[in-house]
Length: 377
Image 1 (cartoon, rainbow, N blue to C red):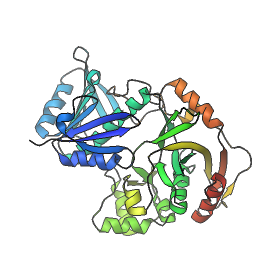
Image 2 (cartoon, helix red, strand yellow):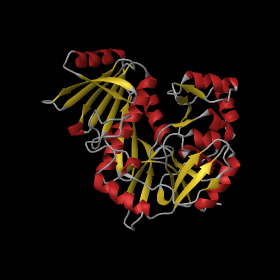
Image 3 (cartoon, rainbow, N blue to C red):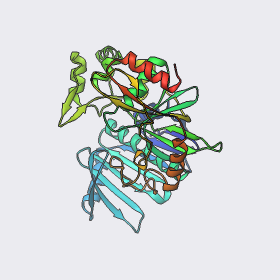
Image 4 (cartoon, rainbow, N blue to C red):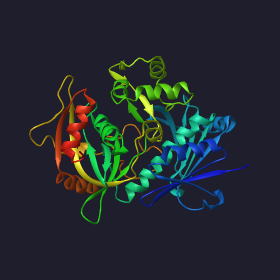
């Protein structure tokens, strides 16, 4: 049986994904390749370093699931899915099964090996990529990086970081600058940060699909692009709600809501350059902080005063990481990085220019204000 392997590398961290299914390794390369380095390697060369092994086999899944359910187990939520976990302390193995997703896992933290087993290729591919990213996160955190909750774009090596709660305009700020002023997109929701030898803050991307509301797609002039791509047979990320796909196909641009939460299009990283002409950046040095506030009907403008500053709450931590808790002990450190590393970065970022802005629904007006205050005009 032919085996395929793809190695991911970023800032000295690396993890290799191995599978008999080329579609699985291709998915990983596609998902991470333009933000992190992804290269195909010979499977026989994979003898050191963390490895994620992916297997598509209904029979193997059934056996692995039985191993969990027949043992004492606990329940957790990971990536919004229910997960049953069984620990074998003597063997150093953590087993897991997500019955709704038909996915099983075997983690061996001491040797850096994780196995993902499922019944169908696409769920295995998405889970494998997600957990390979978690392995990379752990390696970077142990090397002194932290995870900051921010969107980011890069202008001539200078990273503009955008902060705020849901609905404040983090994503809007980043994408308006990328789409209207040609800046490169570094991250949609999170970034890795670490002090560099020059006393600045280096920034790396956290690769992920980007959630874009239908109104934002329309305002950026991307709605028709997505519609045409879908009609030609291409697809957005499979985590997207089917109702969003239906609205895009039907040309319905009004935001979709469910239980107070907006349903959004889920865009693959590589679709930003290929669909929208937005380049992706692989890193940079923090240069400015933006704190947007979105208000319906507002005239885009810089606001008086310094706005709010950064706090510990702007960093991810094991306490606040509810989407990807370290249930398989892939990180083996706090999920947002060491507290002293976060505080060091916090003080360095506090010395950078801070810009408070109010944004409206005039995309060009938003772009003009943002470019002016950040020095990208």
